[in-house]
Amino acid sequence: MSQKLTLALSKGRIFEETLPLLKAAGIEVTEDPETSRKLILPTNDPLVNVIIVRASDVPTYVQYGAADFGVAGKDVLLEHGGEGLYQPIDLEIAKCRMSVAVSAGFDYASAIRQGARLRVATKYLLTAREHFAAKGMHVDLIKLYGSMELAPLVGLADAIVDLVSTGGTLRANNLVEVEHIMDISSRLVVNQAALKLKRERLQPILDAFEKASIK
Ligand code: ATP
Ligand code: MG
Image (cartoon, rainbow, N blue to C red; front, side, top):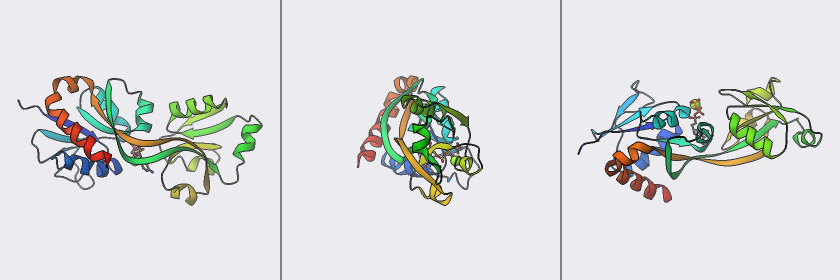
């Protein structure tokens, strides 16, 4: 029986790092999202399409079944909540960490000791709220959608919660990492209904992904 499958990916590092896994499953994307304007990309398998969406929208497309499966960072999944999603595999790609960072001149430790109420800018409201609540810290969270590194430099916030990999962006902006909140990697997410209805098509791909992501 022929069943169409739609995979949701975001451009950039997740797309790039998912390609080898797809290849292991015999799937090759035949257009490059960086140069193509198409949002639905064909593959060598006429029954498999890749849709290109914002990283933070991947769980939503999969939750509602507009995509059967997708790849999303743990950062994005924690904010989404994971409702309607089956999360079988940590693909161990797009690895980074979620951290608290402040301006190099800001004494974070003593601000905490004094019980100061800090302003923290982040895209990750839920994760940040949970982190500071667990530490018993009172913070005012400011929601941003990008370029968090700017916030402490212009006095919008005392601290940021953001993703760090090499630390290059922090250094370039005279910021220092003061707390490591958690390690982040990307997971495969599967629509729960699709997993039941399209199991025959999906399972071999999930198996190939799992095998290719261990090494
Ligand atoms: P959008 O473009 O929708 O605003 P975004 O800018 O957060 O989202 P990307 O920067 O492409 O999207 O990141 C997508 C995912 O890649 C993140 O959700 C995270 O899991 C991972 N990621 C982000 N930054 C890094 C990094 N510095 N190193 C490794 N992985 C990262
Ligand atoms: Mg981006």
